[in-house]
Amino acid sequence: MKILVLGDELLYQKAAPVKKIDKSTEELARNLVETLHEGKGIGLAGPQVGIPERIFAVHVEGDVPRIFINPSILETSQELVKYEEGCLSIPGIYVDVVRPKTVKVQAWNEKGRPFTLEADGILARVIQHEYDHLEGSLFIDRLSEEKREKILAKVARAQNREKRKRRKA
Ligand code: NI
Image (cartoon, rainbow, N blue to C red):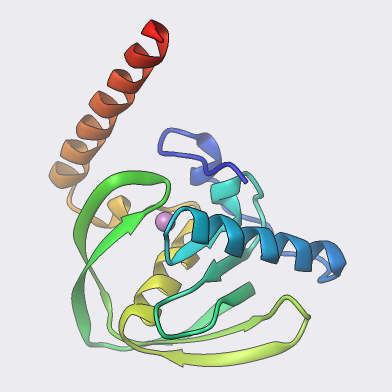
């Protein structure tokens, strides 16, 4: 699947609930995990591949790939931590973002089985990052306006360079 990058409208739209978890959902889940691995990422949400539905895949080191469908964040810790984030939709940008340290989430997996998970560390971080994608929000939206503007300008410069290269090729 093709990963949409910053500037694509779909990344700013709130995703709709998955109505039915069936064979096509399982296939979508497989494709998400595959695309995630190809991109060497640790999380990928439906909207990032042009599917505006509430589903995301997460695969952090030392864990199995996990699929979250129609997730709800039940609890987040009061304790906040800084962690460097990146995003397959904003290639080349890595910035510290402050978020709750732990998260408790309820969701369904690709087999339609409901589960609740309490996560800490990198897993808690990526779940919150992917959940934001379903809400039409990116990690750079959590930064100060000044920092965000700097990043947007940097990304625009890189995208323009790419365009010029492609025109020449
Ligand atoms: Ni992302």
